[in-house]
Length: 386
Image (cartoon, rainbow, N blue to C red):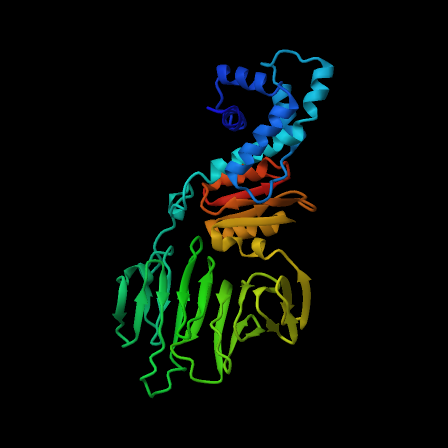
């Protein structure tokens, strides 16, 4: 096994308190080697992890824990000083090992994490189901639909293609069907995609819903969103596409953008990936984000990294030194947990990119290694403290 891979494995075993005495002695020797060799190991591990941004681990804490371990032979002050120079590199390597640890599987079902499963609701429908609500109020678990084109009880035709619903507008119908609405709702811990009757692609994040007509026969294509979704709008030159979200209206002709409008959050956050859109009265350019609040009739425009904003579509959490409560609220929407905050958490932040399909306990452990906060897990309840 190459030295870099061995180093990653040994460090991971150490911080997980699963290292044998023989492996610990090997680790002790490896971390005493030249800085150049450690740098090469970091580079190789970084490429292997394909991690876009490092988690800022507590370098001195992790490094000091190793070099001060009583099982390591005393190190001279000169040697210790030299070793501290590579603490940052070692930290980056630990970051890679954590990323590899949490990302070693390819997107298993969320129910495979070690969080206890929820029970069925009063109607016997699993809460971990994507639901399709028809115009007559009937609710159908999407998993119950067969693959391919089918006719629903309401007479509507729809196609299920693996993990996506696809509508096609029936131009032979003469009746106005804009008043007939369907709604797709995602549970906590699951996202889903659909193609609307006009060809617009929508990807819903967890705990979200979108309501849309079965045909767009008016001058506007209007949908209603609760939660978060990414849109790739089919261009219809004479028919604007409108998204209604918590009192904010987003208008486009053909573009790609992300809207985050969870009911419990203060603002509606609209991010433009490409094209152009109007949020309320403000025009956005690609790479800009609008924070709007209907209650206060305010709107703020800022530049953002669209790759970070839309990381959820590719199966990642991406945080840019965000407030720890905001981070935990995001995790709660995916893992369906209750979060309790204790102590003074002011100024506690987290930055990094983690797999949404990681084991929940490993993910929290990775965050703890930043030295920002600690977690106590009691079933589905997570207590956050300094």
